[in-house]
Length: 172
Image 1: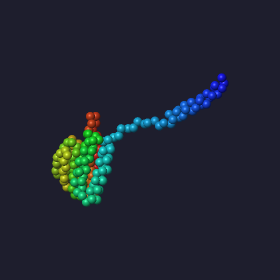
Image 2: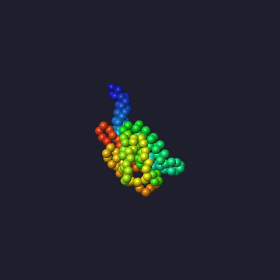
Image 3: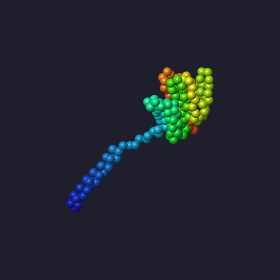
Image 4: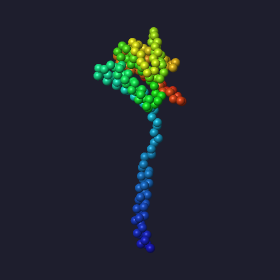
């Protein structure tokens, strides 16, 4: 009978080794951390700010019409942004030498105020004026944009309205 246990002794050690290896792998396995939901609004406005300067620089490098290239970019970006967040909207001010192009992609009309005049800029339209400091009135809230001496500048306003909140970011 003792020879029966001696033969089973090797199997017992193999079984214990398998259990210990399984236990070690379970301990060493990384625990998945809960990832935060990406902030699409922040991604979209940061991406617009980054890409807008690239568009202006490329248009200058290629000797193209800067305001025309920027209009193409803003139209394409508005379409792209709606695929990521259906409520993402924006308006922009592009300074090209001594002219300003104000573009509206906010989904509502905005008022453009100058020192001596005021204009209504409807959704999906642009208004070209002489370069100067301006104020955009968006749903009764004024946003002032100081235009500096640099020949090419992009300023923007981003808005996202959901059922629970309205988020606004202004890049002056």
